[in-house]
Length: 369
Ligand SMILES: *Cc1c(COP(=O)(O)O)cnc(C)c1O
Image 1 (cartoon, rainbow, N blue to C red):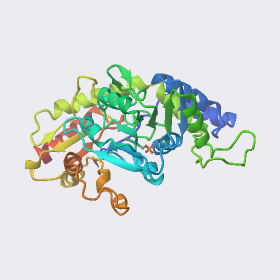
Image 2 (image 1 turned 90 degrees about the vertical axis):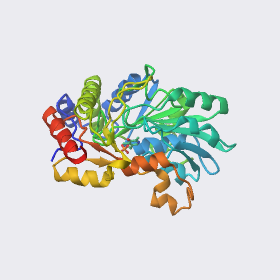
Image 3 (image 1 turned 90 degrees about the horizontal axis):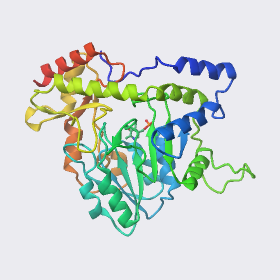
Image 4 (image 1 turned 30 degrees about the vertical axis):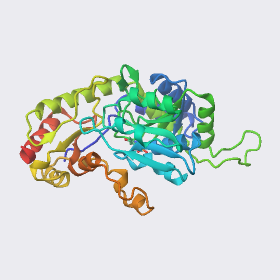
């Protein structure tokens, strides 16, 4: 079986991990945390970073740090991972959805303004699968309406929008270091921002909102979201290779694009837009409706040929857990629904070899050609 993802850990990972063990620094108090925060935040043009346990936790803390609560509305894409919506719903705020662009698969930014009400507090942008959201219109709308921007850049390590790093656009921006991201710490995440108060709030929320003077007296409810020195050791080794990894992913995307160029029956990821070149977090395929099979069936047939795949996101308005709460009743977002029904991705991990890409593409031809 060609796995859908496998990370590359053949740099300084072992060396830095051994250093943790030899020095005894394994908890979140270790020295690699600060180094990783500084290196990573600087790499996306930010003043400060807060390392946390995962990308979902980074989003939870970001929503809480912005003070989003009951009565507030947050505009966000329906086509994303559940991580984006959790804290919005738990805080009693209302997620307001927009559909996707059929070509880039990112949120359709032309639909945002019509969704703004006096209760709108923030726009959450989520860069999807390797191409950034078209940020200029979003920045303009946010500025004109006085809205905050939360930027989920989990899939965007090393990507830029008009030459500026992804992760530099939100009032708060977040990353994930799950093993299928461009760089990994096993589990892990990062919050980056420029505002000192927001960063301080995120640091406090990460650490149960312990107070410096009265440690066990709490004025606010936080979480334990602390990253360990072991994870930061991996992160430091990985960030050393970020540009190499991005280059490798771009090569993989181009290779798959060549191998599948004349494939009838499926839409491939865009190689570039006028604001960014794809970094192919994953290599997605979107089946034409005329093909007569959906993503689920194509994935089943590819598994039979030894090719690992994963489905596209299930839109937020279709999530049973959210529907049962009475959210999104009667709402439909046809582009996102089609992405879910017809989309999936093929082996895209950094450890995938040229021969594996060729076999995977061959199998895709046999199933869809
Ligand atoms: C992976 C991912 C997350 C969640 O990150 P975890 O570290 O797995 O919690 C959030 N948003 C997007 C867009 C992601 O791709």
